[in-house]
Length: 194
Image 1 (cartoon, rainbow, N blue to C red):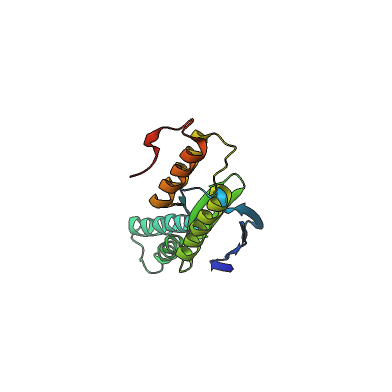
Image 2: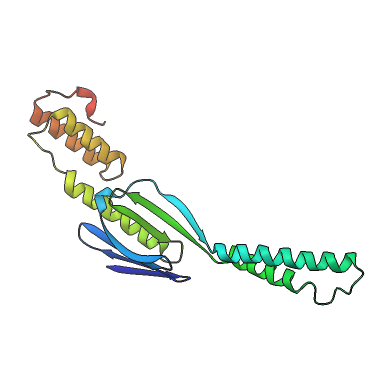
């Protein structure tokens, strides 16, 4: 499954593979791509807003020039006609600076970062990543490893449950099975949900 996003010259492509997502990007600063295993996607995200700083700087400069022209005309009893032009241009640039922004939801991982543009496809991409992360964690850690310590296996399934990967019923079932396999060693009797 491939989902593409475009906004103000930013192009992002999410290629959802079986075990990992390939995130490719292209913007005015360059291009690149990164492969991120679904299991490495963090629970928490951050928000980043990208604005065109050039528009802000030029807008402020033109406002300053326009303000100087208007003040000079008022102090020297000159006509104001034409003196507000740079104030108008500067105001338009500042309005464009505020309007032309790109908001991202960012997932930072050790393998790289995923930048999801806040547009009509944003929620679809986030939901797909979260869903595939759960599936991947279940694939990697969803089975009981009888060679592992019972306490560590109990901790593993509680961790999966806390992240919404397994339900209460599955957690209870797995904890009961760990208790049975381990014969009660290295786990306490209060581990099974009631």
